[in-house]
Image (cartoon, rainbow, N blue to C red; front, side, top):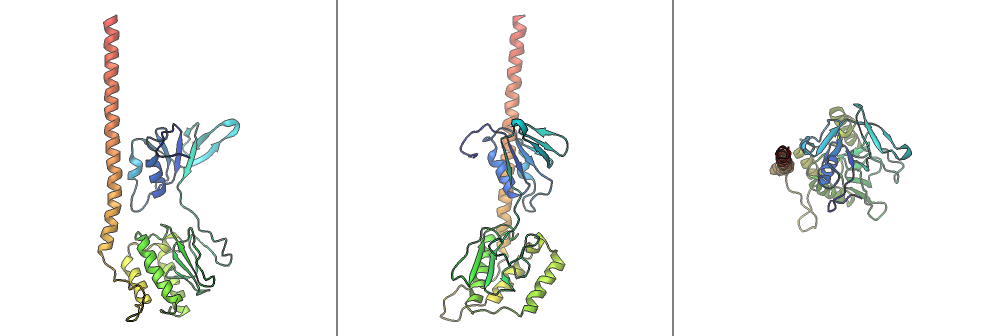
Length: 289
C-alpha cells in the first residue's frame, strides 16, 4: 500500500477526473515516482474543475486502451498510442455503481433506485427508507423498520450531512406515525416529473442548484413535534448555507492553485541550479584545455 508518510519510488497511474482521483493524484506527489500519471477523459468535477491536475508533477493521459502483463511486463497503453512501462500501481477513482444484493427485490437502474419518493421513501414498501445515496448501507433494528443510511457524495447535494439530517428527521417522523406521506399517485408523479426534467440517470439525484426547494419540501412534510413533545425541529432553509458551501469549494480550489504555483516555482529554481552547475562544469572544462 502506498502511504503518504512514506517515500516510495513506485510508478503510479490514477484513473478518474473527479474528487477521489484528484485527491489521490495530489496526495501521491513526492511520495510515488514523479510524475504521477493521471488518466482523465476531460469530464471534470462540476465544482472543482481540473485545477488539481494542473500540478507540474502530474502528467495527463487519455483513456487506457489495454494493459500488457505477460512475462512480467507491466506496460499501460493509452488510446493515443503512448504508453507507460514498469507500472507498479493503477488506482481507480472512477466512482461506483449502485448495487443492493442484500435487497434482491429492490431494483437499481442507472445508479439510482426507481420508486423512491423524495429520494427517501420506497413506494412499494413504506417501511423501507433510504437516507443519502446508495453506498455503505447501515441497517437498523427493528428489522421491519429499516432505515438505510448511505454515506455518499452521489446525491450531488453538496450539503451532504445536512441533507442526511433533514432526510433522517423526515424518515423517523413518518415511521413513527408523526408525519404522513402524500398518496401514492402523488409520489409517483413526483418521480415521473423529475425524470422528465432531469433524465433517468445520475442527474436525477442532483439537488444543485435547487437546494432550497428540496430542503423546504422535506421540512414542511416532516412538520414539527407538538408542544412539549421530543423531536428535531428543522429550521427554515438559510441561503447563507449555499455561500458557505461554495466558499468551501473555493478554498479547496485555491489550495490546489497554491500547491501548483509553489511546485512550479520550486521546479524553476531547480532548473536554474542545474543550469548554473552546467555552466560551472563548462568553465572547468574550458580552464583545463
